[in-house]
Length: 182
Image (cartoon, rainbow, N blue to C red; front, side, top):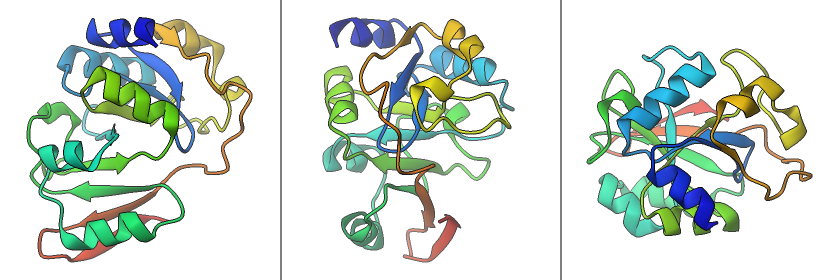
């Protein structure tokens, strides 16, 4: 774990298991690292990425959380990413065109520990090249992508995710809701 944290703190990128699919990630506050992920994925810069947080406190440090969001987080059986307005302390390159950001409060023990030790939110985007299928297990990740990142986590490489992604729900400060992905 210490090695992974050092890589992330020095602006590196990692492949890692999340509470859904395998992700490619970095320190969400490091713009150079964020740009590396766009380059690795061959992803257009105008497509936002989501971030993961490990605690309600970190979530509240980044955004004003509408009451409806807490209810959805509490009631959701499947991992859920919520798109919030007006985030604080994040590079604009991570944000959607309207200035919003998707954030998932993770339940996965490995991710919680990783984010806690990093003490910063973590970028999470599928560990595939843009347009390719999302990896449900480590062996689904392209060998080319594995070579492009700084480190591939050893944890849970044999595990197959039961989720092909999280639900994505946008919630406005006035509690309006729009389901973007079920």
